[in-house]
Image (cartoon, rainbow, N blue to C red):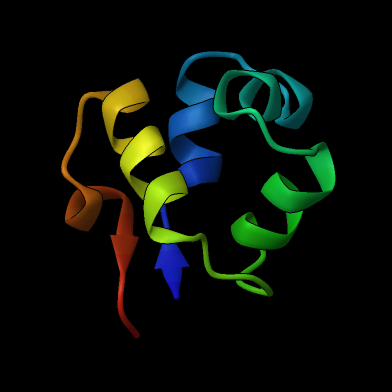
Length: 63
């Protein structure tokens, strides 16, 4: 699944660890999601959506 997490994170000058802390997951989880190796759970996708004030579809795109 494609996503814009890395871009959104960079726009805010956050590290992967910063984003992980805000989403209550590990930095490794953020890294795996950004690289497309792991798809987020629905609750995590909703949490990211609220954090960035975007719809889930604006962050995550089905390939």
